[in-house]
Amino acid sequence: MIYLHKPYIKKLKMKAKLIFDIDINNEKKSVWFEVDKEYEKYLCDDRVDAIFIGVLSYAMRNGHDIKSDSYITDDILFKIKEYLLPSLTKYGKSLSKVQIDIKTKPAIDNIGAVGTGCSCGIDSLHAYITKAKEKNKKYRVTHLCINNVGSFNDTYKDAGIANVRRKRIEESKKFAKEVNLPLIITDSNFQEVIPQEHYLTHTYSSTFAILCLQKLWGIYYYGSSGLDLSTFNIQDNDLHDCADYELLSLYCFSTSKLTIYSDGLSETRLEKTEDIYQDKLVKKYLHTCLKEAYNCNVCSKCRRTLLSLYALTENLDEYSEIFDINYFNSHKEEYFEWIHTQIRWEPMLQSIYDKLLMRPDFKAFIESKQEKDIPEEQTYNYYQEECNKILNSTTYKVGKAILYLPYKLKNMIKKTSQK
Image 1 (cartoon, rainbow, N blue to C red):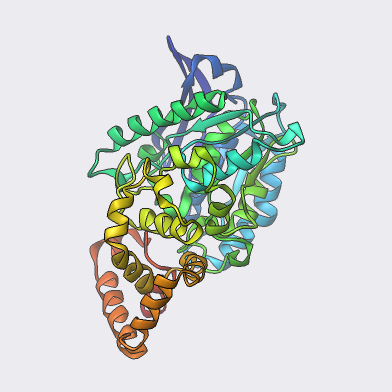
Image 2: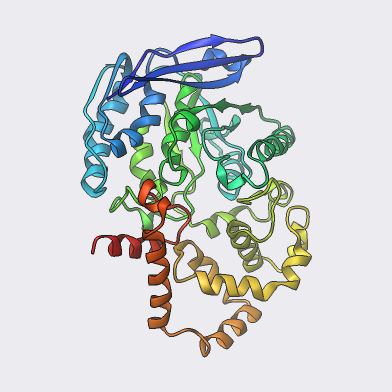
């Protein structure tokens, strides 16, 4: 059982904290969400919408019902009970149906601000650049955010999580100043108190941050999925990226007063990149790295981004402020080899691969590889061996969650584990 107590605001000298005291099987925990003093008046302390969505996946995965002595917005409760929970538990075999006992209130008023993240990745830059030009002022971005609810996680541990966050905040401040918009920097202990796999729950944790400031937002653009609507999927949703069903979840997490959009939902990551790659803000601020506060050039996201840019433009030198273009040019075949190897396992790379085939050097490289490729049967055997290693690992046996693995490999693992 998860019990959500009525949230309250703790006023500090320069900050304000929205506090959520919760009991999980009678174990008391306290989650806080912190903002600068000027945003205190927008913290939502008269309902549990934020923390409810924050713990919802955790409850489904651990067999907890949810109760509260506070209130939840009626729109959210209705859609979650009517659409989200039945769908996810029907197709997610490890998820439990959650019984919810919370009183309801109508959607809360807000000042109509329009927000989006400012991590400066492709998705967040796309949300800002495209929505800053909206003719209808109702949909035009008015505020930028950088939230700490799980994205600054163990992927940055070698570079130092706190160090990377500090440097990225510095860059976000520069970006916000250049575009003349306020930047809201938030912090939270949510991930430490309710530890969850970011890959499986980032939509929930990000919505937690959005709904904590529910009195501010009329619209919020969530820059998440790198795939378009053709990949919408709730089958085995307990094992896959929660972005796969964002069309459903963000609809259920919105209210009649606050709409949360998955930005660029009709486009692939390459198409989003094509929309914005020529913008001066991209050439100056783009950050996609999984390992460092700067773009390392060699992690999977840096490789993917560099190859996307190479597929789209003749002049990579324009991106020398954010990537080591000399390194890319002198190691180009290594990048070609990487996408050639990964393409069969990672759907997001397909559109990049197809675009790269329009370049003579990449096309020639692929043609030269075709005669040397490992036969399909040998490739399958190799991945089957990797599958068995993962299934027998301590991490898999304890966590029951698989992060940063190609989609097809995950399916192979799932099928093998069911034999």
